[in-house]
Image (cartoon, rainbow, N blue to C red):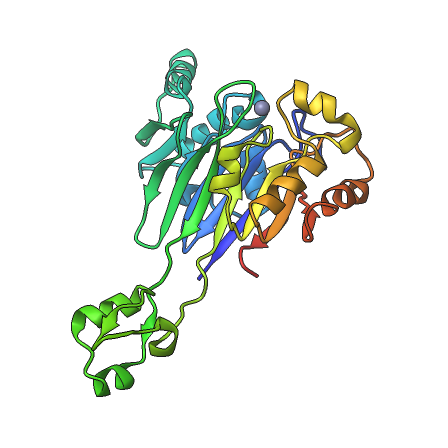
Length: 304
Ligand SMILES: [Zn+2]
């Protein structure tokens, strides 16, 4: 089952040809979402051959320009190309007014309905509960209200060894418990699901930190993520600057990923001041064993 993240923009604050501002395209089991919409996002989607008319929803982490200024242009193009299907947009308080005012000032209207939903910056909130996947917002610690995002698959049921269960005459409720991975009691014995079932492949998850200081909520919601993309705007030597601007350093990103037992850490929101990306990676690697610096155009197959 497809679970890909395409990194469209991995830079901080100012877009340049080699590194755009923040935007990511997610395809989970054929459901397409956009995470943030930095300036230039629609061109980046075209460059990386992702069909934006297929987007089901757009998640906006916060109202800083490098995360949201590409949104009006993208919506406008979707409309010009005749989109009819409704679009969900999740974001901070004020996003709906900003979109409405933009369309009022340019005296245009959209060809499709937009449903703008507010996430909660106090507690994680389930934004999408699909049949096989879920999107959950994660309140993080930035200068203004900001949320990260967890995109995850639902765990599949265990597959019961049918013949064995039949021979043992396991009743229905015992079979169901085993399929949930539980250890039910049968004829005075505790059954071990691993000997009665084949375990499903592990459910995969992708966590986006957005712009943030390291924080408990990200540590909790990021727990066990297959992949985490973490703000690493600054190197270790610029820790004071990271603190003052409510961003993180490479080392802080690495430490949080280690504490949350994340599989792979991708460093992002990289400041243009750093040329030596390998040095940034090495700093984070002192804290976490599997680290890469994300770049524009990187396609990550979650769980590969
Ligand atoms: Zn920001």
